[in-house]
Amino acid sequence: MVYVVDHPLILAELTGMRDRTCPGPEFRQRLRRIASLMVPAVTADFETKVVSCETPLEVTSGQKAARRIILTPILRAGLGFLDGFFDLLPDAAVAHIGLARNELTLQPEPYYIKTPPVIADCEVILLDPMLATGGSAVEAVQRLVDLGATHLRFACLVAAPEGIATFEAAWPDVPVFTASIDRGLNDRGYILPGLGDAGDRLFGTI
Ligand code: PRP
Ligand code: URA
Image 1: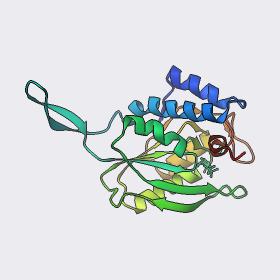
Image 2: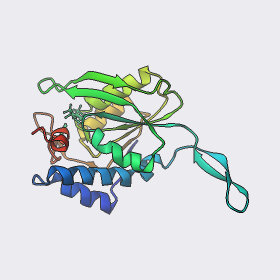
Image 3: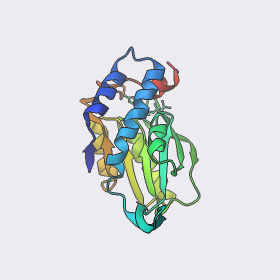
């Protein structure tokens, strides 16, 4: 269940982000715009419910998402995806999951988790621009499932085939939305061609 959301506007923004000379402010803006452009695809199959609506002329009915939406960025780089999703889903709640990938083992090390008290029967959208080995995304889903999440999907920007395979093996029922499937990983677990370290480029920690 991997969906490649490769609208031309998204691909143009992504190309700008890949450029090593792209300055931080531009990098953040491009990521925010891509996030917003991905929202329709990521949420297209959300169940809706009928709600009453009063126009200036009469009472009618409309629709809204049936479940509460919880945006869940994996810190830090997932924060770069958050505002673009928030722009189109302003009523969403936010769960934060802090994971740092150990540079030597490439294993994710959890350091912070804060979610709304109830996440069961909510639409939980996990956000992280980078799916590299897949370790962070697999761990994040495990944490959310342990906390009761029942409806999960994962939105990323760039995915490596290795990460997709690992994620699908661990969570075959969790759909993945990505703007690009890149060629593979280098020996340090970085995506090729990729865009480098997303967290460092977002937050200037280079
Ligand atoms: C990066 C990225 C993902 C993870 C992907 O985060 O934002 O969370 O690596 O790699 P994986 O698929 O191999 O687990 P990192 O741990 O570098 O932290 P940061 O976002 O704080 O820079
Ligand atoms: N994390 C990143 O930020 N970039 C990669 O290429 C791999 C993991």
